[in-house]
Image 1 (cartoon, rainbow, N blue to C red):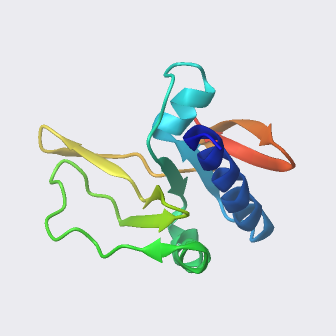
Image 2: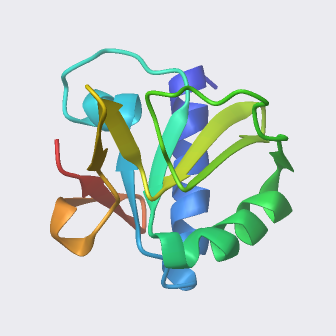
Amino acid sequence: MCEIQKKIELLQKIAHRFNEANIEWALGASMLLYFKGIISEFHDIDLMVSVHDAEQVRTILSEMGELHPPASAPDPMYRTKVFMEFTIDSVDIDVMAGFSIVSEGKVYDCSLDKEQIVERMTLGTEVIPLQSL
């Protein structure tokens, strides 16, 4: 099976678990751009989740794979409230809740909210919410 198909199938499994648990989430970053036809490949799966669902997401994804310890020195450009890295079936998954970017000393809150989920797509039997570009 090709690597892209493997990642798509893993996204479907994650979507099933998240949707079943009523997690507020959306697909973002390079995999989103791939599905939009903007790029032709991607390396990992980036998921935006609500802050209030972050612990439940940690539990679900920990059951599916390995949670990596947090980086000792986070990038000062970001002030994300929760950032988690997992490896599931040898695929890297990044999860962000309360995502914020610092630019010129000002913090811009880019946290996921329902209004940013402007589109949904179907993969197999699963609905995948897409973060606004």
